[in-house]
Image (tube, rainbow, N blue to C red; front, side):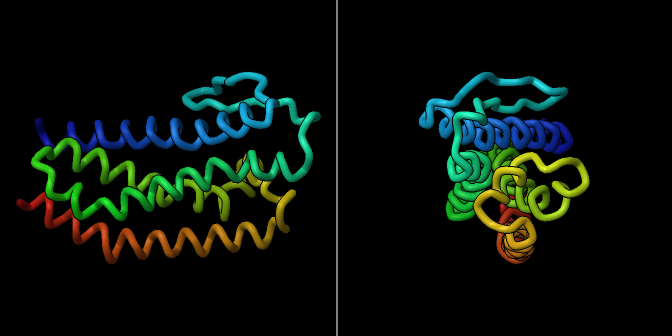
Length: 165
């Protein structure tokens, strides 16, 4: 399999895994709170719809932050397993998990620190029920910078070496 095909499959895997983890966390919280309404398909993405009128501000905040917490947890599990992942003989598995790890580390911090102000609040609408929006955006920005440092200093050298073998 060519390098380019592995990259495309890796990117596709990252998108699919991101949606499963992020929206899956929203779904689990909605089901646990008994407020699940439906799954809405919007363009290439999906969204978990809830009966917001039945939720307290705290519940809405927890529902909205659950996706980011789940992606961060998944990202850090993958970071901790990266040395082992890099010993895999499967170039496809390494490529897929490289892109999945990057997506999990970067997407939510980028969206919740910068992009939410440009393209609509999304999860930030609920997160700001838990803390001031400026504080949340700064927090996610700091997390994003820390994640980029982890990618640059730890993951990139590790995966580069693994792909050279």
